[in-house]
Length: 342
Image: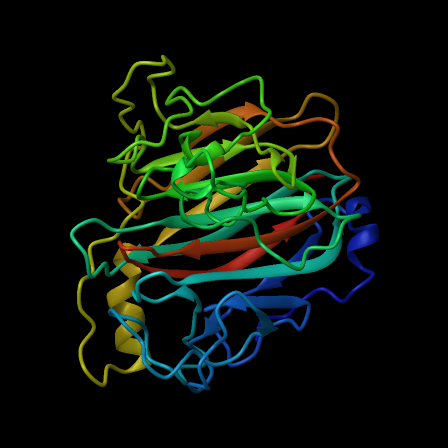
């Protein structure tokens, strides 16, 4: 387990330049106890456990006993991962950090992510990283599918359908969207917002924004989570909305050898890793940025730059979420660090 800053330290962290607020590698058999598992979320560093209850919170531990897709081996510490989903159909997973960290010195978030191993023709859905108001409880993610565990939705956008609310006290949701629905305001994402996605409010098939990074803003319940910006050069209301990313969010790894060792699995996964850096600087009118290292030799490349929502809360909580549906993928996270900017 990685060293984690003790509770209480974060409240004073803005006084020290670049002070680390949270540092969790997810490579071990255990993780910081302040991290709440939800649904299929589990640690491949731990031995396999019992079946995880869909849509329920639990301490982070071993993954369920019947994995689908080319997942890393279990019991792999210190070569483990946070596995949000394997490639089962209709699987959801999230991890929630329900302890406030200071926002007064700005925030820099870095992590590694893997999206690969689809067992269907098209991979889905994607991974979200989100920040919430630290004064609110963070015990449940938002709607899954195209909302990536951050925003609200009405499934399939039906007029008679019931809203699934977004995450409570949402401030910012970054969607690393392989399938492409998080980019659009179909399924009533962004309900009540004046600014809408260029893709409009109609539920679309195929999805309007594959391989796009999209930022969505503050929301509560069924209101908000408005589109802020996305990594496409087409901001018009007529598509297609081609991705402007210099690489693919999705990695090309289809199989994992039987009885693969943890170190061999790690070597196979290394080329399909994508490293992500999100920065919200301190001060008035902050401009947030998202950089991604696509493992192509060019290092971190700027993929998104947008005005951060104001007011900025004095403290943040954070989470990651991912899901599958009738289309599948394996979703992994590793080496998460939150630090102040100044």
